[in-house]
Image 1: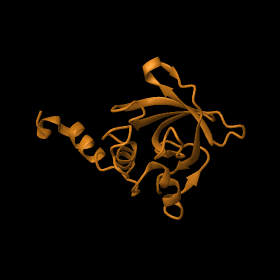
Image 2: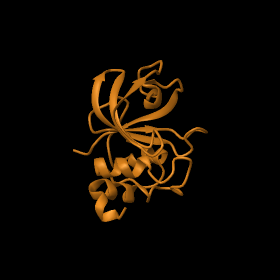
Image 3: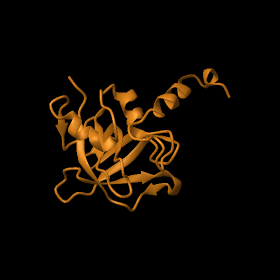
Image 4: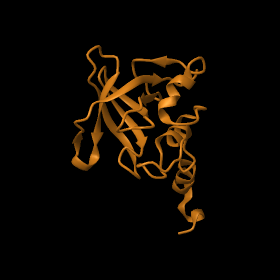
Length: 151
């Protein structure tokens, strides 16, 4: 199918192919960082885990969610480049709904739950909805916190 027939979705996929790093990790061409950049207009580049450091002095950072904020996951063996999700809604002090690309490889997830399971309620450890099983995933992922939208 020609790119011009894909419309806005095709534009998103073509942007996703220019992710930081190789863009060809286990996640394939659709990447979370270009998706979050397109949705939030935050001027970040490179791997998702590097966004936290890049935000210092450029965007407010916090350990509590707000709609439009970017949740930044740390790099781990399972997530070598980290991960970013965009907060769509705050359901409570320990639950948000996020939009994210490529949590399920090759897909954009919308309004998916993420819960804070940290001991200090600081969003440093989270569990994420896993749509293939229609339930929260069992893995706990380390996170830096939230990059808040400017202004």
